[in-house]
Amino acid sequence: MSDRSLDRRTVLRATGLAAVGGLTGLAGCSGGGSSDGGSGDDAETEEPTPTPTEGGGDSGGSGSASFDGWFDDVDNYDGVVDETGSDSVTVEVGVEANGGAYGFGPAAVRVSSGTTVTWEWTGQGSSHNVAADDGSFESELVAEEGHTFEQTFESTGTTKYVCTPHESLGMKGVVVVE
Ligand SMILES: [Cu+2]
Image (cartoon, rainbow, N blue to C red; front, side, top):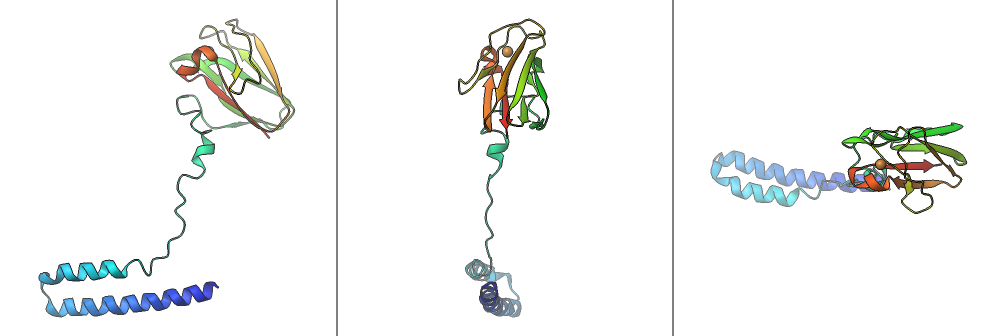
């Protein structure tokens, strides 16, 4: 299969080369700049044939990497922190980010299914909450340092969440369960 296509390509290339060679030879013989236009046209016609196009590969994985733009306006997102296998995973609420203490730390975390994630308030940046984008959980809105909120993630998938009052500033996070 590949042999056949290679053969065909070789034949086409040879033909193209012969044609180009002939033209080049002619141009060389005439030696003048006046034949530029003509040879340019011919080169354009030959070119598409010998060029095998191997997949464009346009913007494939970037969408999932940034969670479909979820973190575009989140300045403390620095990749997904891998906490798979950890017994306890803590995310700080109110870390320095997004123009104040308006971040989750880390913004994105990966955990094993069955893991309980504990959000712990730093006491910075006034009142925060933790509210799932899909409505599956929502903490109370509090400012108190040391306050905690827990959520156990049983099923695999990605859960996006925000701090409701600071979502527009970029106080957003993700828990990836695998
Ligand atoms: Cu907040």
